[in-house]
Image (tube, rainbow, N blue to C red):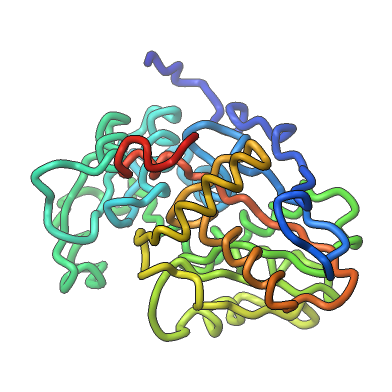
Length: 307
């Protein structure tokens, strides 16, 4: 792919594709008046969904820099998005990958490498030692912009807060639901949601709740109420269950909407379960944020997903 040095990454994003679609027919929603989904997965085929929003203001800050340095795991869509964006901007990119270098790269890592990202593998024990890692890279820090994993930080939250601009009649929804990894997107959603709304995050990670105080730390009063549910991780980050895969296939059959097994599949599975448990009050109106990043499905065996 030949990249023109004057290409604006922002011009590659098709904001009009971030349309609202009704998906009520995919659920047995007796108590819920309507269920819509915001299709952020459609704005770009690589810098997909919330990855763009969390990166956009970092990329503005990267103008005039020589490189982007960022962090992520072997299945990080953020690494791929950052690598592609850096290539569009004609600057270098370095990805610090959590864990030892595998004999065979995941499709995600291979994509990042193909877009020109230099991958540096760091043991899980040393992964949190950011200063030590950056010093060992032997690059000019002043000529670099460092982006935390998943775009975490105020700059990423600021970008994620722009997501709800694509929801027409935002006030018509009682609940906003999104997947949660680092908490960056959810923090932005809570910030821009209306005070009378409830934001529900579905964690893709297994473990103790360390995310709620993180999301709260980015808020100012008044803000929407929120909670994070940890019951639908299906074994942990980038883990899956037969029930999850079955749901994703049936959801696509009913709606034509693809999901991924790391984030959006778990989110919609949780929506279905919460509806069955009568979690939502009578006549609730839900909007679900499709966070994109479905390329991670390529790590699954061929034929497991029927889309």
